[in-house]
Length: 539
Image 1: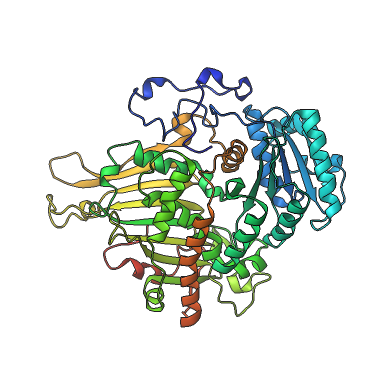
Image 2 (image 1 turned 60 degrees about the horizontal axis):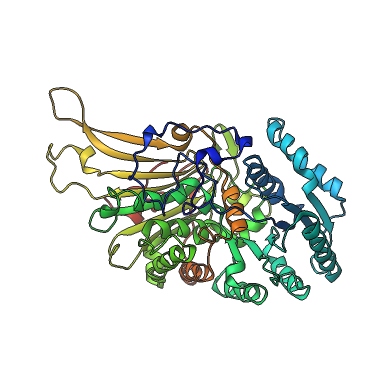
């Protein structure tokens, strides 16, 4: 759930969760801005607005996304008592299965250690069924319409339906067209019809615009939920709370005090059988166009006028519009692309990208990219934002590092490099979600020696319970109709405008593809983007 939802009291939470609250001695009344921050003493998925009874129709339900993400997230919501009464799931896919076989396949996805989830699924599985049809068969959609009417009578779902397109993007147009022809996108009798679309939202500005046109022909924008699971992660949501609910940070959140910002996504894995997909995408399309630019907008946006979804998304769009498209010379000077070559991960040898299955041996597709961006507005004029994403790096990590400017006078001597480094506010998005602040402190003893120390906050140790999975929050938000954490049409278009100028510059310039050894932090040339007095963090 997004940060903007209100929550019930701790005594209102479902008894199934078994969750306990920490002592309320940790917070004092009046220290929070209620509109922008969920009280951490209350259930993070609780809401004054309960989800109405509805049906979730998953197109492509036999795919990996349903087994790995959607089903566990729905079960997490069920265990927390967050699914509405009468909630049902219909899997819609082409494989020949019965509902019983579909449930059995879903149950087989749980590991031996997931006994609690498996027991929950066994209790809940009667609400899951399967409808076999190809995506282009009108008869399948007529049978779906009939079943939705039956469920409305049987389980009291007042025409409320969410369609989840868990399919390759190539199937979107067909499904949207068939839903429209069958009258399944039309809202009647006060019920809602919504559609959740997985990334990628196109592969460039033109295809994104074409997709948006097709979506708009079937659904109104308020019915469309473009899902980017990064926006459901706790630390990503907490960026707004950190900024706007704490007066110690926001006055410093500008070009006067911040030297630069680094946003890093490093992945330890290589292609893992996805070589064909990655050849078409590359790391810029796969990670930077959506995940990293979305995080950047939350870091750089102005305070919204309210906690409404569109008020927040308005400010995010303004950030993207303030980023200029890249000219050919700027692409050469402010971007770098690279591919990993064979190396080691731990003590295991791993192949280079060009040796991966389904990869063209002459490919120029980037597995690593580093980009310098500027947000040309009053708050951020002249402050660089550095975005970096790569595969086959030493560890999996996603973080935002806010580097504050160095002290203007080295009080403790010009040789004290530690104090010269400046303070860093670190937002860890994965895998260990939390926030830390680095600052200088005097080492005990007779001499004035400084050492970096940290104040550290970790979600797991501070709140003593699991954070809801990103898909849990986003699915719940779609059920209650909160669009805050979903990408709007104009956000998608502006992000593609920026990325297109980079990709086009690489093609026009025939820009060199650097290499880096698998298991390292990327090519040496990436440091050149930061200049002589800055360096990339190593998560």
